[in-house]
Amino acid sequence: MRLKMEYRISISLVAVLLAASLVSGLVTGCRMETHSAPRVPDTGGRDIHVARADGGTVAPEVGLRAPTGRFTRAELREIAELSPLGSPPRDPTNDVTDDPEAAHFGQYLFFETQLSESGDFSCATCHQPEHGFADPRRLSRAAGRTPRHAPTLLNVSFQKWFSWDGRDDSAWAQALDPLESPDEQNTDRLAVAHLIGDNPELRRAYETIFGEWPDLSDPERFPEHARPVPSDLDHPEHRAWKSMTASDRQTINEIFANVGKAIAAYERKLVSGHAPFDRFVRGLKTGDESKLEALSARAERGLKIFVGKGHCTTCHFGRDFSDGEFHNTGLPRRSWLKSRDLGRYTGIPTVKGDPFNALGPYSNAAPDSEVARELEFLAQKPENKGQFKTPTLRNVARTPPYMHGGHFETLEEVVRFYSELKAPVAVAHREGSLEPLHLTDRDISDLVAFLKSLTGQPLPERLKRQPERPLPE
Ligand code: HEC
Ligand code: HEC
Image (cartoon, rainbow, N blue to C red; front, side):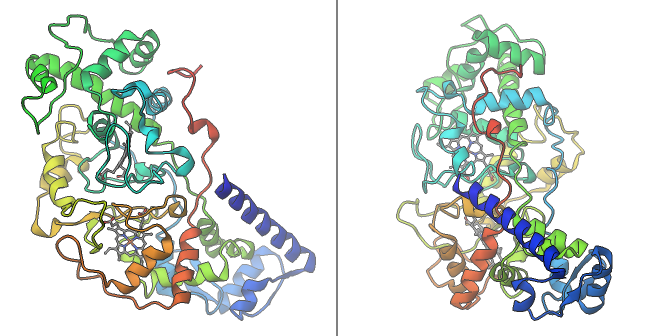
């Protein structure tokens, strides 16, 4: 709520500044003075554009230009990569990613507490709409306690690996983990199937999207509760799962996968771009001075550090500020975390062995598609120890605490960490490319001001709660 207000305020500030500059007949304002750029007479948008281009820095290969003294051409090239956000890429593993009915059904399921053993928890217990779909707690609590921090789901469908260790290669396969995890919702795939089959509304929604519902009425073939529990082969639900025929298990897996696919279609709607930073880049593209006001002078300095001496874009690059890969940043130990979380090292065999991966029977991707091939060639290496996924930085100000274990409470602490890199590394070795930046206090607060400019437009309220019915009216 407060963030929304701030965003509105900054928009109206920009509008006021723009109006003021029109009235005075000059394109002016504190920014120009800060950077001591030459004042340009107002000769109409187009001419100003050309006039400034003559005196400014131009990176024609990326279509950006900046007033004199503000960015180098190399910096402009880095900046161009970061904006605009645009729409998420297609997910070839999920045929219903863009189906509005699937997204609606998925939204219903996302908020549905009956999808937990106790009836108390849903995805929104930990991915809280009012906290940028992240958890404001370091670790989450539902049926149990999670060993890691719950990240934001805003812009999640821009990613190619899911969870901090990338143990899933699609958003739909990821959605199946928390449903059965004893730490999270602790239900099981048979209970989920029966819940849908026994509820006329849910069943009608399912059939509308995925086709005919199979007959699950024989309790001998389809027990009330069953799931694979590889870590405990004597678990009654594991034994019940093993007692089923391969083809009945497949029938249930199909339903379970479809539940994930509907939820992923909903997650695809959780897009939040159009941040002040994007407006600023638009200004560098169009020469529209009023848009350059979207960043304060401090945030602009922070941006210069981000793409320059901070080397942040080594990993946080692209329109989602993430390379989609995994790194060991050498985080310190924390008392609330287990001592050796190997991250990507264990994520690789998990995703390769997952029947719900891009190569598996429930994926809609062709076996020769890029996602499937990438998975095939993926191999575990020693340097994967202690690596975690580079998170998006869009909306980062909305979602403290930070890092895979909620290591830091504030953005300032995160930036100070990168600046000093002095605490002993908890797991394996810090990546060689990371060296202490020795930033000044002012640099640190400028970088933080820049990170705060990455807060995108708020989501419509209708996406932040459970719809009344599983299908649109
Ligand atoms: C008990 C809290 C909890 C619940 C309930 C929960 N999650 Fe999560 N979620 C987490 C945690 C913790 C992680 C990080 C997991 C990890 O990396 O090991 C996570 C990770 C994710 C991710 C990966 C995001 C990324 O950037 O990689 C997605 C997507 C997600 N959850 C979706 C869901 C959905 C959909 C549901 C409901 C079916 C759900 N979650 C239920 C805590 C929860
Ligand atoms: C070597 C790659 C790399 C570089 C360089 C890098 N980061 Fe990161 N960043 C990561 C990874 C990986 C994580 C998650 C680490 C974890 O949780 O284990 C992360 C996490 C973060 C987070 C926390 C986000 C969240 O939601 O928890 C912030 C903020 C951040 N980085 C900002 C920066 C800034 C600012 C710079 C430049 C000073 C920078 N990063 C440089 C890889 C990098």
